[in-house]
Image (cartoon, rainbow, N blue to C red; front, side, top):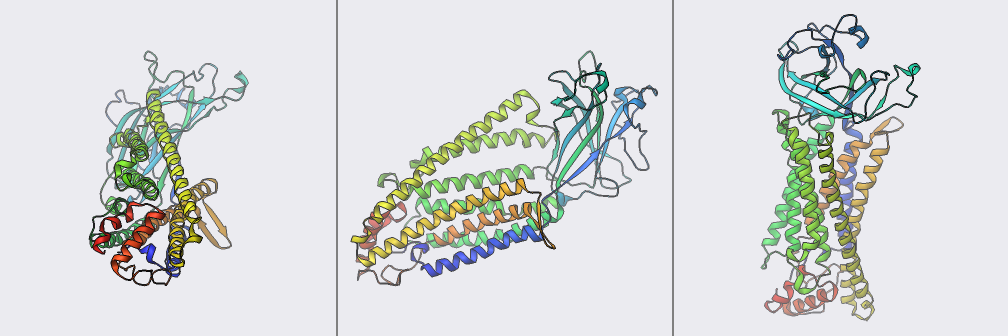
Length: 545
């Protein structure tokens, strides 16, 4: 009878494997910390106030803030009054990127947030629940002297959340409100070199459009995009890990199919986890360098969601297969209470993502948080997903407690066993606890590095060496979960050693024939775990597997 490799591997070999994986884990962190730059860059843009004095604004005219064809500009709103320039004639123009620079497909995405500079005026105060309505046009071109091509044109409403800390008296006129930043635009690819934003604030007193929003002095944007250097390191890492996980996955399934029994539930779940990890690893992002694939962000979210759902399901089934009764083992239906919250939570997050990034595929200025209904809907999805996550962890903690209580009960009977049987029990218990502790360590490292990346400045300096903490977090955690899946498929692959031969403790099992060995091992596993992974021994012991 062949068990899993982890059950037949000596402690020395297990430590060697763990040491090799630890070396690769350290390399994954060092690649991000020492080789890659910071994952993202933030660039501030101040809009230029252009004048569009045409009588008909319906026909698009692209107003450049600088360059040979720059627009007719004004420095501030006060300058518009003596020139009899109306609010509808003012266009806030932003060129992306800054002068003498170009955008690149290696930037992967663009995310913009908006900050309004609003001055306090006694006769033009911000009313309660005020909403600013912007008429936004986005264009692109790949040559500095080519014509602009329209990419999007939308009416963009945003609710203002501003406070004025000083008393609202005449002497404080001109001071700025303190306003929250607003989500503005997100594009899932950077396929062009130059982009142009023209933002209008049309005023219509009859329809109450842009009335009671204060005196807007300036519009500021902050653009965030992925660093090209980090993208190259990230792509290289994916390209290296894809064949690594795929090869071990094929090897793992081949060893299972070589067995004279069908694969059990735990083996199927480990294989499914390998498939989901491979799905994440496949570097389809390389195609985004040559193609304008704006759906890559949404596709990436879906891939991560599938992996996390499989990982959470694996933890539940792994624990359950070591504690559940005989009639409930080896059937996914026996875990519907635990897996159900995973499915519901994943579905809620998928719908939320489709309502946000799915709509942004056609309207880059859309945000589900800009309306009351959208905000309530988004919060509902997130709360339901959070409740499901809490239920899942309650189930998981209870099952882990049950498994360790089962092990503790078996440990109390170890002294009464024979030496060979006691050593084998102790080895199995150690290996089970080892895997549980490794899982806990991986989860803890993910949380710890996430917190560190949020509270630090993004990099540490040790002498002349600069460590990019955020990049190390991304590459290190990504590499860690790949190594985790790799270790699972390697250690839990069926071993081709016979139990009548030398085992992990270096001793002979107390049996002479293969039939006796099968019966002995069947009894041993039933006493320890009652796990479906080894239940086939009972069915096939007579055949001398």
